[in-house]
Amino acid sequence: MGQIWPGAEELAVDSLGPCRVPSPMPDRGAPWVDEADRVLLGSTVLDIKPFLAGQAWIPSFEPAGPRERLHLPPKEVTCGIVTCGGICPGANNVIRSIVLTLYYGYGVRRVMGFRYGYAGLASKGGFQPWELTPQFVDDIHQQGGTILGSSRGPQDIGDMVDTLTAQRVNILFLIGGDGTFRGAAAIHAEIQRRALAIAVIGVPKTIDNDLEWIERSFGFATAVNEAQRTIVAAHQEARGAYNGIGLVKLMGRASGFIAAHASLANCDVNFCLVPEVPFALEGARGFLSALERRLATKHHAVIVVAEGAGQDLIKSAGEIGRDESGNIRLKDIGLFLREQMGRYLKDRGLKATIKYIDPSYTIRSLPANSVDAEFCLALGQHAVHAGMAGRTNMLVGFWNQRFTHVPIPLAVATRRQLDPKGDIWQRVLEATGQPSSM
Image 1: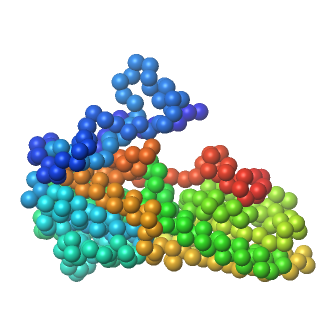
Image 2 (image 1 turned 120 degrees about the vertical axis):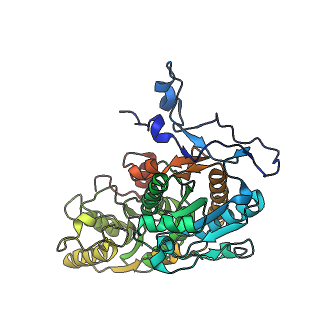
Image 3 (image 1 turned 120 degrees about the horizontal axis):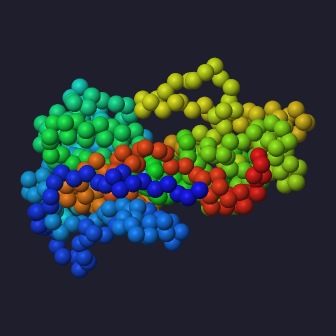
C-alpha cells in the first residue's frame, strides 16, 4: 500500500490578501521566492510516479522565504510573540531571530512580547506585555528556557483576540507544540469571524519532534546530544559493577524519536523501548528474559526508555488524571522498570546493581547547541517572511531539506511517530541487538 498524501486543499496556505507592498529588504543577490515554486512531499521517483500521468498537480508545500512584495506595510505593523507549553532549548533563539529580522530586515519598530503563554494574552492574567527591541534580546540566545515565560492550558479565545485588537497587533507569532497550535487555529477562526486582518504564524516547539509533516523541530538536536551524554554515564555505571544495569528515561510521550536517535548516536545501548513498539515484560519473549540473557553473557546492560513506552504494562486504579494541556498524565515507566527488573533478578537468585537516570528537566532547560541555534535562526527569519507576506493559520516547517509553509490544521490532524517497519527503527534493532520479537 502506497503513501496517502494530503490533497491540494489541505496543503493550501491561508492569506490575508494580495501582496502589493514592495519589500524593504535589500537585494541579497539571491532570487526572491517564486510563488510558482513548490517543495515536493515525495522524495523519490516512486513517490511522485502516480501523479505524473496527465496530472498538473503533485502533492507539495509552499516554500518559505522572503517575498518581493508584501501584504503588510512594515512601518504600520505591530507584532506579538508568545511562547507556550514546556520550555525547550532554542526558544530564546527563535524570539531573538524574529525580533532582529523584523527590526533590521523590515523596519518594524513595535514588537510585543506577551508573557507566560496564552495567559499573557488573557485580560484576567494581568501580565503586561514587554516591548521587545534588539537591545532587549541581544544576548538571550545564550540562556535556556524562554525570557517570555510559558504556561499550559486554554484561555478564553474571545478575550485573547480582544487583547490583540487592543494592542493593534497585525502578526501574532506563536512558539509551541500541537496544543499551542490547536489554540492558534481557534484564535485564527475567531479573527476570521470578526473579519480582522491579523496573521497567525507558528514556529514548531516540540522537543519530541512529533508534529506531522515536519521532519525536524527545534530543540530536538540539543536533546539528542545531551541524552547521548547521559547514556555514556549510564554505560560507565553499568560497566562498573558485576551485572550492572544503566537505565535512562528520556522524553517522548507518544513518539520515541529522542530515545531512538540517542541510542543510534551511542552504540552502547542494548535495549531501546519506545511508545510505538509495544513489548512484553514476562515470558520467553519478554524484556526481562532478554535482559537475563544479556547479563548472563556480558554482565552489564544499558537500557533507554521513552517516557510513554510500556504504559499498558503498569497496573493502576484507572487514569491518573490529565495535565493543564489535557494530556493524560503518564505513569513513571522508569521507576516501574527498575522495580520489575530488581524483583525478577532477585527471584532468580541474581544480584544486580541498577542505576536509574532521568535527565529530562536538565535537557529541556539547556541553551540550544550549535545545530539547533542555526536552525532556530532560520525558523525565526522564515516566520517573519511569512507574516509580512500576509500568510496566516500556518507554521514554518522543514521538509526534504527545505523550509516550508504548513497549514496548522494539517500539522495537528495526526501525530508523527516512528514507523516500526521503517529505516530508523530497523537501524535501532541492528545497533542494539535487542530481539525484534520482544
